[in-house]
Length: 317
Image (cartoon, rainbow, N blue to C red; front, top):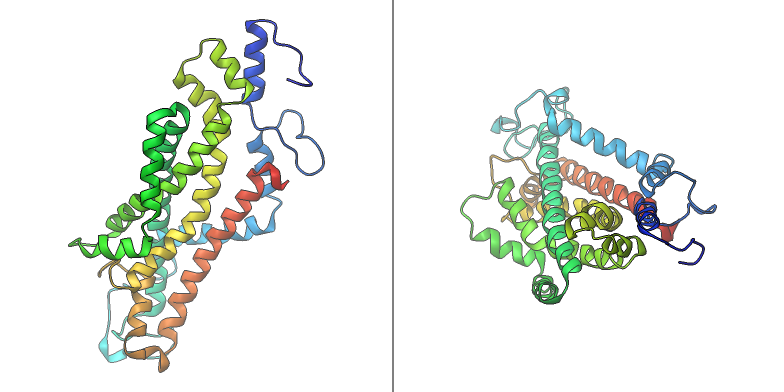
């Protein structure tokens, strides 16, 4: 390698593998990375100085908090309704008014965060796990496994995800949170798999991997110790951005009537109910508040993904 002393023996090769495996080469826009700092420490240093990350992080922290403990800010039961208050406007203690069924809109908006965050996080974890595993193995071993995976991903890419949801979910009897999560994982993994495959192919050609192989390191050690730490960044970026997309997808499917079913509280279902018979014309609050909550949540996760992408991509430094 240019600019490095020649590797003269096993000790030199191991030193080369360890130094290269510590992180990707790159800078922060002002020169080479500071001595002793890895890609991850540099990325965190950039993130905490990025106002977009701070704003998105605070919003997401609030959403997670009310998802875990919605009773902190909403003492009522989201399923407790009074038809006598149907479409009533906001009043003291009922800040967002009532929907067509006489349910408190504020309470349903708060409890709807739990559904959206659960679907988004679980779907993202499932997609990242399945896609990284299949794509990483295909990129590392190549050959027939790689060819099969490429053809399978091409087939899945040809299926429109909303149309697939209409077909898949309409055939299921009970549509719970886990049913929707399973569908998103089923159709979402190919994108991550393709990115993981390309990252692993690039990483395994680096000198520190070749040095480790020359020293007799096994496939498992090379994958875990040298390839995975340097190939996982693009997967993290893609998964973080996709999280907001999965939340919007769940709301879309619920709006179309094939997503979550009562008694599960969903922003998409509430928006759909508000659209029936154009009820929102006379009571716009039944549409505005759940739609605003959905928009803010999706925007927060997309902002977080953009900030993570900027921090982890050396080309953007």
